[in-house]
Image (cartoon, rainbow, N blue to C red; front, side, top):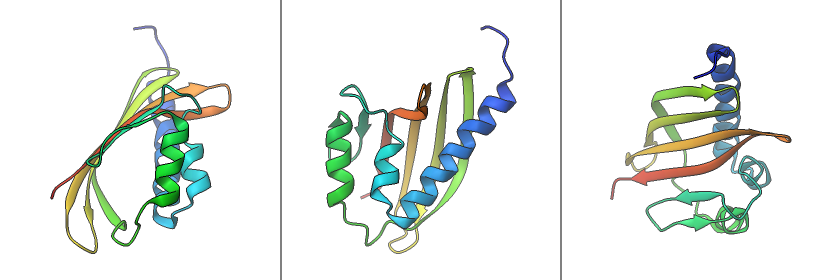
Length: 125
């Protein structure tokens, strides 16, 4: 792997991850969809099925039930693999129902900024 400032890149990804979480908590649909790569190859996998492409992800965000979406995070891990590529993973517990879940996000630096190119979310039944 080429040398790069791993800590600085991880700080950039963490800042984006935290901004995403704030948008999620506020159900800021426009901001949430803006974090995803605006491309047909963007993917979000979840218990209800996969979303393939930015347009499907945006439709999901607009129609999503947010009545039990407030959550507390644990085990947040940010890893940079290059100056332009990294991952964010965490576990969470929903405040209302207590259900536990996990998520992973693959972040890529694009000309327009850091974007999620692939995400996976799980949630206990």
